[in-house]
Length: 280
Image 1 (cartoon, one colour):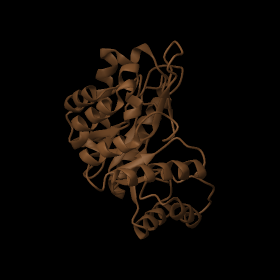
Image 2 (cartoon, helix red, strand yellow):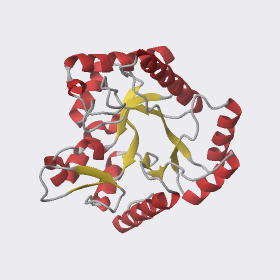
Image 3 (cartoon, helix red, strand yellow):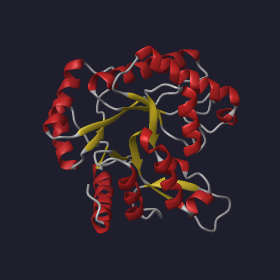
Image 4 (cartoon, helix red, strand yellow):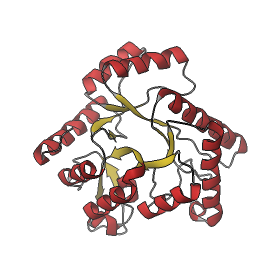
């Protein structure tokens, strides 16, 4: 697998970003540009990645396609199409977003409407509309699983893929986001293996992180954390990924705020891989 993450730090030019990329040791990254970046700057970032044999694994949308404000929802749809078109032009396999919510509480909020039949139909039509408008040949539109939003299980993701019925709709894997109850938390290896076993043919990018739950406090609180700060056995987790995905599959750390935090998590996973005899 190609282990990486988001290059984090302070830079003003692609050349300054290049120094951080080299220092990170990442072999796969999230795109450091978007569809609103000027083409010359995008080309500079792409040349840097090619020079260092680094894969731009995914480009994010991260906007609410169902925002209750119609203007914001329309802007999000336009941005999603722009990001998918850029991904296709740049050879980035995974253009990823979350499904979206009509909640006024936030773009990624938990809301009862997230799981209604009407919302599900809206999600299907939204994905189809984005893909049909762009007609990508190389890139795939994907949804990141969420604890309180479709898709929230491997079977649910498979059903969504069937219902969308577009070859350029694929899967983004975030198994921690789907560990959303004590039953899955307490038997994580079996659940993570199920995720990859069922979705592996469709997976275009994977997020890797840890999870923890207080064992005695009521009620249940599950929270993500950096690898090594939770309870997952990463020799097992990396073994599952290695078993089901090809050798060049990108696996990305996320949600850390400093270069040092990413470096520590990267080192932790490298040590786990070495101990388990898994090639990175």
